[in-house]
Length: 313
Image (cartoon, rainbow, N blue to C red):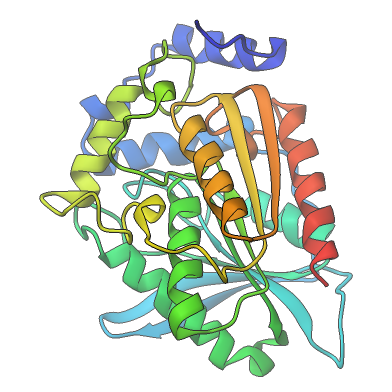
């Protein structure tokens, strides 16, 4: 049975269909990135006023990883240091960047009263798996090591992201559990968790503006190439053990091919004794989280997540 969209989500879906925008899978990766970047002007809400937004260059074996630090006017400081969310943008590991997710990072910083560091990891197909994983792990460890210089409380370090970024955040949490740094939480917004794509939601009629079944295959081919999709660094749901992971906030959308993956991952974490806050938006499609200008449910999600971030300490 097809999922019924909320009226506002249905209106956006209809408008996108009528616009005649080319499907991502018919474009080259650079062309897809430009379309994705342009869409933000239509859908992103107004940004809040922050204390600062500053570029950051994180050292890495291949050079530097671009990042951006968002500091709100109000920070929840302890001993002069603030909590920090290290954020990884969505975009199927092929598109998305600091600009496409700037407003949502600004809103999380503002409402969560914490520093947000957005990481611009390398994209496929120019840089295939595990390049993105290497970058987000490197970035998270660098932030933890340099926490005091960044004004960050290393004991209140959280990772998070949406879609591909949620996948990467889950992988970072697994990596950090075994090799550090200790994390205070993981924010997983409609995360991709299993490249096998065997869940029922992968066979439902198309109802997503950004993520069709065909686009998922296109992104997977660009990102994985010939890599083993059962590698837990690609499919974190294939990890052998979920015990000892930090508290998680898992968000899913009803009209999303990734819905069942996120739901299953929340259960895997909960069954392993991890504290899980699970939030489902039944009438929304994949990608709604950044569309606060068009979809008020996106703004509600940001506010609810900010409450959770504050509850972490």
